[in-house]
Amino acid sequence: MKLLVLPGDGIGPEITSATLDVVRKADALFKLKLDLESREIGLKSLASEGTTLPEGVMKAIRAADGVVLGPLATYDYPAKEQGGLNPSAELRIGLDLYANVRPAKSRLGVGLTGKPVDLVIYRENTEGFYADRNMFQGIGEFMPTEDMALSIRKVTARACERIARRAFEAALRRRKKVTAVHKANVLKLSDGLFLREVRKVARDFPGVELEEIIVDAMAALLLRDPMRFDVVVTENMYGDILSDEASELSGGLGLGGSINAGDEHCVAQAQHGSAPDIAGKGIANPASLILSVAMLLEWLGARHRKENLQTAAKSMEAAVDAVLKDPSGRTRDLGGKLSTRSSRRQWLRIFDRNSWARSERGVPKKSSFFASSTILPASMKMTRCATLRAKPISWVTTIMVMPSLASWTMTSSTSLIISGSSAEVGSSNSMAIGSMQSARAIATRCCWPPES
Ligand code: NAD
Image (cartoon, rainbow, N blue to C red):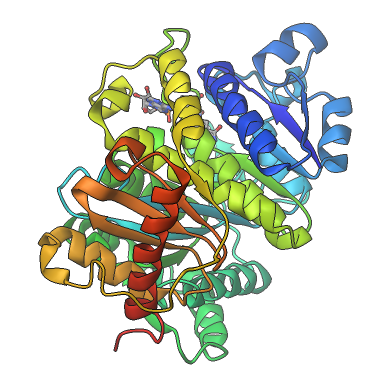
């Protein structure tokens, strides 16, 4: 499986290099047979080839199974005529990557406000306010006079319908709720069209609750009550802004993984930009790109029906949780002291140290181990219930057992990946399997059938 890697600008090369170490480790562990090829884009290819997106690279992108795209210093690019193409925009439009999927999950236990966050934003990715790419020819922005500038927003029924459908499908695998974010009180026609399509799609998903919220209220409610939101569907620019807010709430922009996905192609791309303020200092957090690549592997696993890709994706996500759980495993943006280079060593150590239990043999259907929920602190209980109620057992279920026992991720009924410190739960395989029984018991009891 060919993955094309485009490190990009600013902190791009630093976080891409750390991410590739983790990907290579997952490749070896799960026998993914990945073929990784790196090419230059952005300011480097502008200097060497006169364009930020060489034609040969675009050809390689189309031929690859997936793309890992580093952040880009697009604000510093010259005009298109001088070679300053925005690779992000070119890929999203050129490959019809209509869904920008941006999860926000409180990976350090709780988010910045002390409240748990577990939501995913489905952002329409091909039109909206983005005037540099929303026209067939020319751009959607112009200046009739020296002192007047106009921008056009594009909204089509087709784009709204397909992003809404992907959001409802995702909600079926989660807590079964979609929040449509709009500004139809002002943009009555365009956001009215968006809402019309969302409501139409909602009729095909009677088991999913639809909530509609005006975008300014959404910005406030996200802070007030983040767990109220499960899947959020919205247009391009609202989604861009709200996803940065949600990422910060979950711990920081350095945790913001995302994919740009269409029906044929998928590009892993962190939510943040090239972070020029810290570029070259070796302190950037690679977690955002590692999580993005995990999402890409999951997308590829579903597309090609390869369970090892999906298991690798879950294990990468679990490794992120395991590293970040310990304050000494955090980079500076998260209040820690680690450099990018030493954080990379942490990721690899977690992969090496964890026990990988892949057999279900001998796992009892029921166990009373951990049965008492009174051992859970209130915040954990909330996370646990919210997560377990949402997902049937055939889907990945993250179980927050107790702070001292870390978190557990159970993949589609066959494997359990232990994240967190293996010293606490025992590092041998037998201990891992013993613990697997407990985790399975909890999932069986709480998750299937779902709690009412
Ligand atoms: P930014 O997202 O690059 O940075 C915002 C803040 O978050 C900065 O303080 C930065 O240090 C911090 N940050 C971001 N990622 C981090 C990480 N992995 N680890 C630690 N800290 C991190 O936003 P900006 O500074 O406004 O934009 C810089 C450039 O990026 C601009 O040229 C902009 O056009 C471009 N941009 C690109 C993308 C993209 O490629 N998808 C997205 C947003 C911005």
